Length: 356
Length: 239
Image 1 (tube, rainbow over the protein chains, first blue to last red):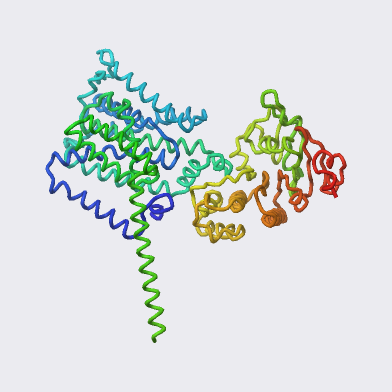
Image 2 (tube, chains in turn purple, brown; image 1 turned 180 degrees about the vertical axis):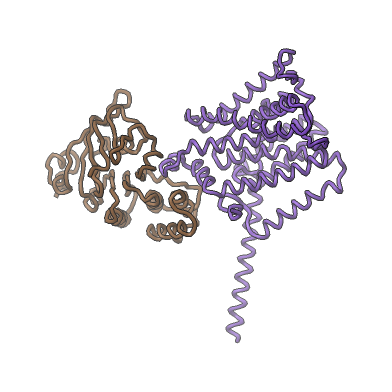
């Protein structure tokens, strides 16, 4: 099973790659010991969004489906977590609220995906329909300010957003600060490895085949619609995981986290990073989020303009993504150097044998 | 025994009738060629059998089961395998992975790797197995697609102009490949323009003209049919 961690669908293999992964993981694990609690909380916040980016990478890069609906499912799970956590009374029930809210996002993705995929919607229209559904939810939630908009004791509160839910809790222990950070690290490791195994498996082969040539894939006996739906549900479920964790982290959620500017962000992260590789998406999204947050401290408008400029630069200069491009360049150089070393060693061996 | 039965099938596109009330039987174990001049409706009939088009009327049976309403993947799962007219491979994936995708549902583990190697050798693609399929020549892509179709071990192999764009040597080699599959018991239905290829492989031939069956029979009788020569082959080619 662990053989699937490496394969033709993912960059990075061998001892050197996994040593680097372990080194980064070790650095991430000791980071809270040296950083102040504000920075640790901030890092946990960046990590929340990585799931959404990985989900889009799976759908767009591997499955060929450009979904503009990541924040739709982020919002469904985010609001879902709030409603469930408030109605279930907080405490350890928040863990159940997290699981159920992600399941809710996946069910919603299953329903929307079924109608789109079985209805033959693909290409640019897939993006248009998912964006439309996202905007419908954002506008709907924006007009829920009145007291009549509530589910049990949970008020939706329109543009002011929903608040008052507990963070993730086990017994009396609130999962916040460093604890939340470690939960994020563990979840990212699990999701990243699971996705690597998925895309390098037989199912991943069919997902890639469907992206490349859906008719040919069907001519090999695969019902490509089922594979597309599976990809869409998993990718959207990961956006839902981001949404539920976000609500738990901040104990609030507003419609602005679903609307158009928010919906465009995952596209920028994944396009800039390199949509066709999970590692590139993970690294690139984290770097962009870090940069965005740093610039936002000075000017939110400047940060948004920078994101737009990055998207333009990606489309015009590196359509496959900057991080992926740099990664491939480094890998090629490394392989080239090893080849050269091998040639030198072979030549030395030949001379030695001639001398003897 | 009939493996494929096309019964009274028509296909209309608006006011145009591309295939009109066609009856066709492909027997198990034969190489059956579907020929005809441009616009005769060959490719449309092929797509009807494959399931890419739903017929306007009529029915299609495979191994005595009505498959008229089934999608292409379901027909493939029943034992059909298809090679389309234009090379249709996964261009951004390596050659070996193309074969692997076709094989993975049938065999796994070491057996799959050995079957991949066998097919790559058969198709003369071993040296190119790590290349992206899109980097292969046109003829090699045609063979790769034939290999993917063969990987399914089908009862019926459907080939739409398998030699399009191939050199005479490649065409001959493809013909020999088709004959070798047939010798192992595979039924083959070929839509083809190249009469040299048809002569090389066909056991029975159906001629389509203006969307209707114009003639059918064994290869010799079709080649000697003056009417067929008139509409399609050209008298000088008939003998």
